[in-house]
Length: 136
Image (cartoon, rainbow, N blue to C red; front, side):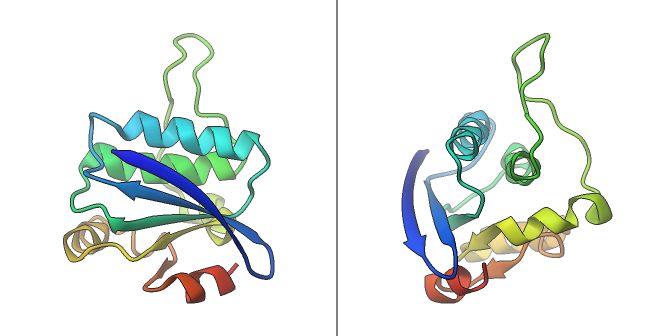
């Protein structure tokens, strides 16, 4: 998994987090750690580019939800173990932060997984960069 960041200017500055490669148990914590770092450095609007991610496992799906929690201002590090901690999705509680974390161009297989597990109802997903940036 390779993770790159870029910045786009729309009505507000948007950081694009481009993921490349499978998103699975071998690297899901890297996604969480990088998202936490960018949030800690002041980013408040994040677009996760999934156009180069051919596969997402359940751990990968959990990392996408964890990123939303980070951008809701919740630290993902446990005080005792230093490991990421997680909680369930709650559409009412987590819904407001959805406007700050969105997905871009998931490949067909990833889009299908997002649909099957119900995350397409949770995330705003855009097919192209321009419309995604303008949505913030």
